[in-house]
Length: 55
Image 1 (tube, rainbow, N blue to C red):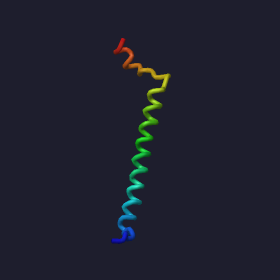
Image 2: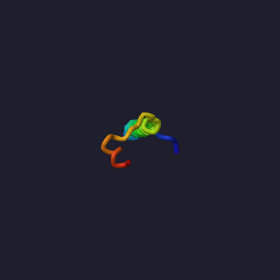
Image 3: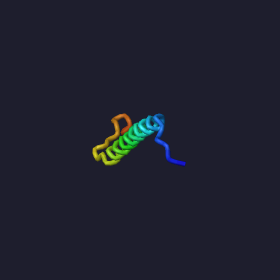
Image 4: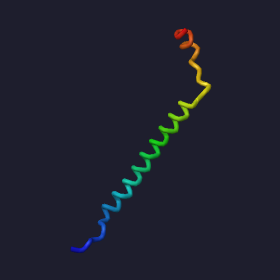
């Protein structure tokens, strides 16, 4: 039994899967960057109305 050429539908699916994978990777990267920036932010202050409640 010989190997057949790949059908057109498989080529289309691969293209879509690569696109979805890139979008998912970009989304994960965006969340990681936002988390990193929020964690390393040093000038964080509570809003004035929350400072009086905590003290």
